Length: 393
Image 1 (cartoon, rainbow, N blue to C red):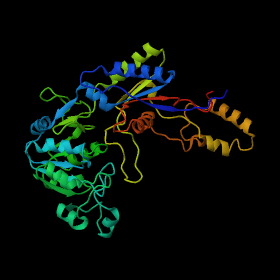
Image 2 (cartoon, rainbow, N blue to C red; image 1 turned 180 degrees about the vertical axis):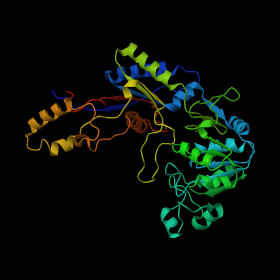
Image 3 (tube, one colour; image 1 turned 45 degrees about the vertical axis):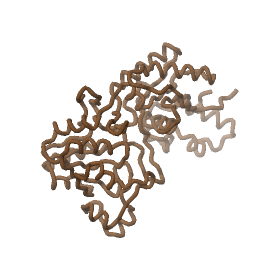
Image 4 (cartoon, one colour; image 1 turned 60 degrees about the vertical axis):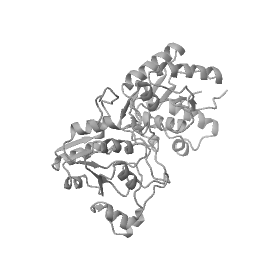
Protein backbone atom coordinates (compact mmCIF):
# COMPACT_ATOMS: atom_id res chain seq x y z
CA UNK A 1 0.00 0.00 0.00
CA UNK A 2 1.35 3.44 -0.95
CA UNK A 3 2.24 5.80 1.84
CA UNK A 4 -0.35 8.58 2.17
CA UNK A 5 1.06 10.74 4.97
CA UNK A 6 4.07 13.03 4.74
CA UNK A 7 5.18 15.39 7.50
CA UNK A 8 3.20 15.36 10.74
CA UNK A 9 3.51 17.77 13.65
CA UNK A 10 2.29 17.21 17.20
CA UNK A 11 2.27 19.64 20.08
CA UNK A 12 3.22 17.70 23.21
CA UNK A 13 1.79 18.71 26.56
CA UNK A 14 4.14 18.64 29.55
CA UNK A 15 3.74 19.63 33.22
CA UNK A 16 4.21 23.26 34.25
CA UNK A 17 7.96 23.72 34.58
CA UNK A 18 9.57 25.21 37.67
CA UNK A 19 13.14 26.17 38.47
CA UNK A 20 15.30 23.13 39.16
CA UNK A 21 13.16 20.64 37.24
CA UNK A 22 14.96 17.95 35.22
CA UNK A 23 13.55 19.21 31.94
CA UNK A 24 15.37 16.68 29.75
CA UNK A 25 13.77 13.78 31.60
CA UNK A 26 10.37 15.48 31.69
CA UNK A 27 10.50 15.97 27.91
CA UNK A 28 11.38 12.32 27.31
CA UNK A 29 8.73 11.03 29.71
CA UNK A 30 6.08 13.27 28.12
CA UNK A 31 6.97 12.06 24.63
CA UNK A 32 6.82 8.41 25.66
CA UNK A 33 3.46 8.95 27.35
CA UNK A 34 2.09 10.74 24.27
CA UNK A 35 3.27 7.91 21.99
CA UNK A 36 1.53 5.35 24.18
CA UNK A 37 -1.68 7.36 24.35
CA UNK A 38 -1.84 8.25 20.64
CA UNK A 39 -0.37 5.02 19.28
CA UNK A 40 2.45 6.46 17.19
CA UNK A 41 5.98 5.10 16.79
CA UNK A 42 9.25 7.02 16.91
CA UNK A 43 11.48 6.88 13.84
CA UNK A 44 15.04 7.83 12.98
CA UNK A 45 15.36 11.51 12.06
CA UNK A 46 12.26 12.57 13.96
CA UNK A 47 12.73 16.10 15.29
CA UNK A 48 11.94 17.28 18.82
CA UNK A 49 11.66 21.02 19.42
CA UNK A 50 11.68 22.45 22.95
CA UNK A 51 10.82 26.09 23.46
CA UNK A 52 13.56 28.25 24.97
CA UNK A 53 11.13 29.56 27.57
CA UNK A 54 10.72 26.30 29.50
CA UNK A 55 14.45 25.64 29.39
CA UNK A 56 15.27 29.08 30.82
CA UNK A 57 12.61 28.55 33.48
CA UNK A 58 14.04 25.20 34.48
CA UNK A 59 17.48 26.79 34.67
CA UNK A 60 16.19 29.67 36.78
CA UNK A 61 17.79 32.05 34.31
CA UNK A 62 16.26 35.30 35.52
CA UNK A 63 17.47 38.82 36.25
CA UNK A 64 15.78 41.75 37.96
CA UNK A 65 15.57 45.33 36.83
CA UNK A 66 17.90 46.10 39.75
CA UNK A 67 20.50 43.71 38.32
CA UNK A 68 20.25 45.59 35.04
CA UNK A 69 20.65 48.94 36.81
CA UNK A 70 23.73 47.71 38.63
CA UNK A 71 25.34 46.51 35.39
CA UNK A 72 24.48 49.81 33.69
CA UNK A 73 26.08 51.82 36.50
CA UNK A 74 29.20 49.68 36.31
CA UNK A 75 29.53 50.08 32.54
CA UNK A 76 28.47 53.74 32.07
CA UNK A 77 29.53 56.91 33.87
CA UNK A 78 27.35 59.60 32.26
CA UNK A 79 24.06 60.01 30.43
CA UNK A 80 22.99 57.03 28.31
CA UNK A 81 21.95 56.91 24.70
CA UNK A 82 19.75 54.02 23.56
CA UNK A 83 19.72 53.34 19.83
CA UNK A 84 17.07 51.43 17.86
CA UNK A 85 15.14 49.44 20.50
CA UNK A 86 12.16 47.44 19.33
CA UNK A 87 8.63 48.36 20.39
CA UNK A 88 7.45 45.74 22.84
CA UNK A 89 5.43 45.42 26.03
CA UNK A 90 7.25 42.31 27.22
CA UNK A 91 10.66 42.62 25.60
CA UNK A 92 12.36 46.02 25.65
CA UNK A 93 9.92 47.61 28.08
CA UNK A 94 11.38 45.68 31.01
CA UNK A 95 14.93 46.37 29.88
CA UNK A 96 14.11 50.08 29.79
CA UNK A 97 12.76 49.87 33.34
CA UNK A 98 16.07 48.41 34.41
CA UNK A 99 18.08 51.09 32.62
CA UNK A 100 15.89 53.80 34.14
CA UNK A 101 16.48 52.30 37.58
CA UNK A 102 20.12 53.40 37.20
CA UNK A 103 18.79 57.00 37.56
CA UNK A 104 20.83 58.14 34.57
CA UNK A 105 19.38 60.54 31.99
CA UNK A 106 18.30 58.64 28.88
CA UNK A 107 18.31 59.75 25.25
CA UNK A 108 16.44 57.32 23.05
CA UNK A 109 16.73 57.07 19.28
CA UNK A 110 13.88 55.23 17.55
CA UNK A 111 14.12 54.05 13.95
CA UNK A 112 11.19 54.97 11.73
CA UNK A 113 8.70 54.42 10.13
CA UNK A 114 9.05 51.07 11.95
CA UNK A 115 11.38 49.31 14.31
CA UNK A 116 13.73 46.52 13.29
CA UNK A 117 11.07 43.82 13.36
CA UNK A 118 8.31 45.77 11.65
CA UNK A 119 6.33 47.48 14.44
CA UNK A 120 5.24 50.80 12.94
CA UNK A 121 5.53 54.15 14.68
CA UNK A 122 3.67 55.97 11.95
CA UNK A 123 1.60 55.53 8.81
CA UNK A 124 4.06 55.42 5.93
CA UNK A 125 1.65 57.20 3.58
CA UNK A 126 1.24 60.04 6.09
CA UNK A 127 5.02 60.20 6.34
CA UNK A 128 5.24 60.60 2.57
CA UNK A 129 2.53 63.29 2.56
CA UNK A 130 4.47 65.24 5.17
CA UNK A 131 7.56 65.14 2.96
CA UNK A 132 9.62 63.36 5.59
CA UNK A 133 12.68 61.52 4.31
CA UNK A 134 13.46 58.60 6.68
CA UNK A 135 16.98 58.33 5.28
CA UNK A 136 18.01 61.86 6.26
CA UNK A 137 15.47 63.56 8.52
CA UNK A 138 15.72 63.64 12.31
CA UNK A 139 12.50 64.21 14.22
CA UNK A 140 12.04 65.38 17.78
CA UNK A 141 9.13 64.08 19.82
CA UNK A 142 7.43 67.41 19.18
CA UNK A 143 7.83 66.92 15.43
CA UNK A 144 6.51 63.37 15.72
CA UNK A 145 3.37 64.47 17.55
CA UNK A 146 2.81 67.39 15.18
CA UNK A 147 2.81 65.15 12.12
CA UNK A 148 1.27 61.96 13.50
CA UNK A 149 -0.47 62.75 16.82
CA UNK A 150 -1.12 59.82 19.14
CA UNK A 151 -0.12 56.62 17.40
CA UNK A 152 -1.44 53.32 18.73
CA UNK A 153 0.02 50.01 17.60
CA UNK A 154 -2.26 48.12 15.21
CA UNK A 155 -2.34 44.95 17.32
CA UNK A 156 -1.63 46.05 20.89
CA UNK A 157 -3.34 49.46 20.96
CA UNK A 158 -0.30 50.87 22.78
CA UNK A 159 1.30 54.28 22.17
CA UNK A 160 4.86 53.05 22.62
CA UNK A 161 6.49 56.46 22.76
CA UNK A 162 4.26 57.44 25.66
CA UNK A 163 4.65 54.05 27.34
CA UNK A 164 8.44 54.19 27.15
CA UNK A 165 8.50 57.70 28.59
CA UNK A 166 6.41 56.58 31.54
CA UNK A 167 8.57 53.49 32.11
CA UNK A 168 11.63 55.74 32.21
CA UNK A 169 9.92 58.03 34.75
CA UNK A 170 10.03 60.81 32.12
CA UNK A 171 13.79 61.08 32.63
CA UNK A 172 14.14 60.55 28.91
CA UNK A 173 14.20 62.41 25.60
CA UNK A 174 12.98 60.65 22.48
CA UNK A 175 14.20 61.30 18.93
CA UNK A 176 13.53 59.61 15.60
CA UNK A 177 16.32 58.87 13.14
CA UNK A 178 17.73 56.01 11.11
CA UNK A 179 21.30 57.22 11.53
CA UNK A 180 22.79 55.88 14.78
CA UNK A 181 25.30 58.75 14.78
CA UNK A 182 22.46 61.11 15.69
CA UNK A 183 22.63 59.95 19.31
CA UNK A 184 26.17 61.32 19.66
CA UNK A 185 24.77 64.86 19.68
CA UNK A 186 23.42 64.11 23.14
CA UNK A 187 25.83 61.61 24.72
CA UNK A 188 28.95 59.61 23.87
CA UNK A 189 27.90 56.60 25.92
CA UNK A 190 25.52 54.38 23.99
CA UNK A 191 23.60 51.10 24.11
CA UNK A 192 22.98 49.58 20.68
CA UNK A 193 19.56 48.06 21.43
CA UNK A 194 18.89 46.56 18.02
CA UNK A 195 18.96 42.80 17.63
CA UNK A 196 20.00 41.55 14.22
CA UNK A 197 21.89 44.66 13.07
CA UNK A 198 23.65 45.30 16.38
CA UNK A 199 27.18 44.55 15.15
CA UNK A 200 26.91 47.13 12.38
CA UNK A 201 25.39 49.70 14.74
CA UNK A 202 28.21 49.21 17.25
CA UNK A 203 30.80 49.61 14.51
CA UNK A 204 29.25 52.81 13.16
CA UNK A 205 29.03 54.35 16.64
CA UNK A 206 32.62 53.50 17.51
CA UNK A 207 33.90 54.88 14.21
CA UNK A 208 31.87 58.06 14.76
CA UNK A 209 33.54 58.79 18.10
CA UNK A 210 31.38 57.13 20.75
CA UNK A 211 33.37 56.69 23.95
CA UNK A 212 31.46 53.71 25.29
CA UNK A 213 29.37 51.34 23.18
CA UNK A 214 27.61 48.25 24.47
CA UNK A 215 24.87 46.12 22.97
CA UNK A 216 22.04 44.46 24.86
CA UNK A 217 24.11 41.30 24.42
CA UNK A 218 26.78 42.92 26.63
CA UNK A 219 24.38 43.65 29.52
CA UNK A 220 23.82 40.86 32.08
CA UNK A 221 26.24 38.59 30.24
CA UNK A 222 27.75 37.75 33.64
CA UNK A 223 25.96 36.93 36.88
CA UNK A 224 25.00 39.91 39.04
CA UNK A 225 24.04 39.41 42.67
CA UNK A 226 24.14 35.65 42.02
CA UNK A 227 21.26 35.84 39.55
CA UNK A 228 20.98 34.61 35.97
CA UNK A 229 22.96 35.63 32.91
CA UNK A 230 23.59 34.68 29.31
CA UNK A 231 27.27 34.80 28.28
CA UNK A 232 26.50 35.00 24.56
CA UNK A 233 23.31 37.05 24.32
CA UNK A 234 23.01 39.01 27.57
CA UNK A 235 19.58 40.64 27.59
CA UNK A 236 18.77 39.71 23.99
CA UNK A 237 15.90 37.25 23.87
CA UNK A 238 14.66 38.21 27.33
CA UNK A 239 10.97 38.37 28.25
CA UNK A 240 8.96 39.93 31.03
CA UNK A 241 8.41 37.48 33.90
CA UNK A 242 7.05 39.75 36.65
CA UNK A 243 6.86 43.51 37.17
CA UNK A 244 10.52 43.60 38.18
CA UNK A 245 11.99 40.38 36.74
CA UNK A 246 12.99 39.18 33.25
CA UNK A 247 13.50 35.66 31.97
CA UNK A 248 16.67 35.50 29.91
CA UNK A 249 17.42 33.40 26.84
CA UNK A 250 18.59 29.98 28.11
CA UNK A 251 22.27 29.11 28.38
CA UNK A 252 24.14 25.80 27.98
CA UNK A 253 21.65 24.76 25.30
CA UNK A 254 24.16 22.49 23.53
CA UNK A 255 24.47 20.34 26.63
CA UNK A 256 20.69 20.17 26.96
CA UNK A 257 19.88 19.04 23.40
CA UNK A 258 22.52 16.31 23.54
CA UNK A 259 21.13 15.11 26.86
CA UNK A 260 17.61 14.84 25.44
CA UNK A 261 18.91 13.10 22.33
CA UNK A 262 20.85 10.55 24.40
CA UNK A 263 17.88 9.86 26.68
CA UNK A 264 15.60 9.35 23.67
CA UNK A 265 18.11 6.99 22.07
CA UNK A 266 18.20 4.94 25.26
CA UNK A 267 14.39 4.90 25.55
CA UNK A 268 13.46 4.33 21.89
CA UNK A 269 16.55 3.04 20.11
CA UNK A 270 16.07 5.75 17.48
CA UNK A 271 18.39 8.54 16.34
CA UNK A 272 16.18 11.56 17.01
CA UNK A 273 17.22 15.16 16.37
CA UNK A 274 16.63 17.79 19.06
CA UNK A 275 16.56 21.57 18.97
CA UNK A 276 15.73 24.49 21.24
CA UNK A 277 13.59 27.11 19.52
CA UNK A 278 12.33 30.59 20.27
CA UNK A 279 10.64 32.94 17.84
CA UNK A 280 9.97 31.64 14.37
CA UNK A 281 11.33 33.61 11.43
CA UNK A 282 8.14 34.53 9.60
CA UNK A 283 6.47 37.81 8.71
CA UNK A 284 2.85 38.79 9.30
CA UNK A 285 1.36 40.12 6.04
CA UNK A 286 -1.12 42.44 7.80
CA UNK A 287 0.84 43.93 10.66
CA UNK A 288 4.15 43.70 8.75
CA UNK A 289 5.84 42.29 11.85
CA UNK A 290 8.80 39.98 11.39
CA UNK A 291 8.42 37.42 14.16
CA UNK A 292 12.02 37.27 15.33
CA UNK A 293 12.63 39.36 18.45
CA UNK A 294 15.01 36.65 19.69
CA UNK A 295 18.63 36.88 18.52
CA UNK A 296 18.33 33.52 16.70
CA UNK A 297 15.54 31.06 15.97
CA UNK A 298 17.45 28.18 17.53
CA UNK A 299 20.28 28.67 20.03
CA UNK A 300 21.23 24.97 19.89
CA UNK A 301 20.48 21.83 17.89
CA UNK A 302 21.93 18.39 17.27
CA UNK A 303 24.24 17.69 14.35
CA UNK A 304 21.59 16.23 12.04
CA UNK A 305 19.91 19.64 11.77
CA UNK A 306 22.91 21.43 10.31
CA UNK A 307 22.44 22.83 6.79
CA UNK A 308 19.66 23.65 4.37
CA UNK A 309 17.07 21.61 2.46
CA UNK A 310 18.32 19.88 -0.68
CA UNK A 311 15.14 19.29 -2.64
CA UNK A 312 13.91 19.31 -6.20
CA UNK A 313 10.79 21.26 -7.18
CA UNK A 314 8.14 18.66 -7.99
CA UNK A 315 5.89 20.95 -9.98
CA UNK A 316 8.79 22.25 -12.11
CA UNK A 317 9.88 18.70 -12.94
CA UNK A 318 6.29 17.61 -13.62
CA UNK A 319 5.57 20.56 -15.91
CA UNK A 320 8.83 20.28 -17.86
CA UNK A 321 10.83 17.06 -17.87
CA UNK A 322 7.94 14.66 -17.27
CA UNK A 323 4.98 16.35 -18.90
CA UNK A 324 4.74 13.88 -21.80
CA UNK A 325 4.51 10.80 -19.55
CA UNK A 326 1.37 9.06 -18.38
CA UNK A 327 0.48 9.32 -14.69
CA UNK A 328 2.02 6.06 -13.53
CA UNK A 329 5.22 6.57 -15.49
CA UNK A 330 5.45 10.13 -14.22
CA UNK A 331 5.25 8.97 -10.60
CA UNK A 332 7.88 6.28 -11.13
CA UNK A 333 10.26 8.66 -12.91
CA UNK A 334 9.72 11.37 -10.27
CA UNK A 335 10.71 8.97 -7.50
CA UNK A 336 13.76 7.93 -9.50
CA UNK A 337 14.86 11.54 -9.98
CA UNK A 338 14.47 12.25 -6.26
CA UNK A 339 16.54 9.20 -5.31
CA UNK A 340 19.26 10.09 -7.80
CA UNK A 341 19.43 13.82 -7.06
CA UNK A 342 22.85 15.24 -6.25
CA UNK A 343 24.01 16.21 -2.77
CA UNK A 344 24.03 19.92 -3.62
CA UNK A 345 21.30 21.24 -5.91
CA UNK A 346 22.02 24.90 -5.16
CA UNK A 347 21.66 26.98 -8.33
CA UNK A 348 20.09 24.25 -10.45
CA UNK A 349 16.76 24.71 -12.22
CA UNK A 350 15.49 21.53 -10.55
CA UNK A 351 15.68 23.20 -7.14
CA UNK A 352 14.51 26.66 -8.19
CA UNK A 353 11.72 27.89 -5.94
CA UNK A 354 12.58 25.63 -3.00
CA UNK A 355 13.27 27.34 0.33
CA UNK A 356 17.03 27.98 0.83
CA UNK A 357 16.76 28.81 4.55
CA UNK A 358 18.56 27.02 7.35
CA UNK A 359 16.79 23.85 8.45
CA UNK A 360 16.58 25.11 12.03
CA UNK A 361 14.94 28.36 10.89
CA UNK A 362 12.30 26.42 8.96
CA UNK A 363 11.76 23.89 11.73
CA UNK A 364 11.76 26.62 14.38
CA UNK A 365 9.03 28.50 12.55
CA UNK A 366 7.00 25.30 12.31
CA UNK A 367 7.48 24.67 16.03
CA UNK A 368 6.62 28.26 16.99
CA UNK A 369 3.41 28.23 14.94
CA UNK A 370 2.47 24.89 16.50
CA UNK A 371 3.12 25.74 20.14
CA UNK A 372 2.06 29.38 19.95
CA UNK A 373 2.73 31.80 22.79
CA UNK A 374 -0.52 31.50 24.71
CA UNK A 375 -2.30 28.79 26.64
CA UNK A 376 -1.90 25.72 24.41
CA UNK A 377 0.47 24.16 26.93
CA UNK A 378 2.56 22.38 24.29
CA UNK A 379 6.11 23.75 24.62
CA UNK A 380 7.47 20.53 23.12
CA UNK A 381 6.85 19.74 19.46
CA UNK A 382 7.34 16.40 17.68
CA UNK A 383 7.90 16.56 13.92
CA UNK A 384 7.90 13.33 11.95
CA UNK A 385 8.57 12.74 8.28
CA UNK A 386 10.19 16.13 7.72
CA UNK A 387 13.18 14.61 5.94
CA UNK A 388 11.09 12.17 3.90
CA UNK A 389 10.24 12.80 0.25
CA UNK A 390 7.78 11.63 -2.37
CA UNK A 391 10.20 8.76 -3.03
CA UNK A 392 9.80 7.33 0.49
CA UNK A 393 7.18 4.55 0.57
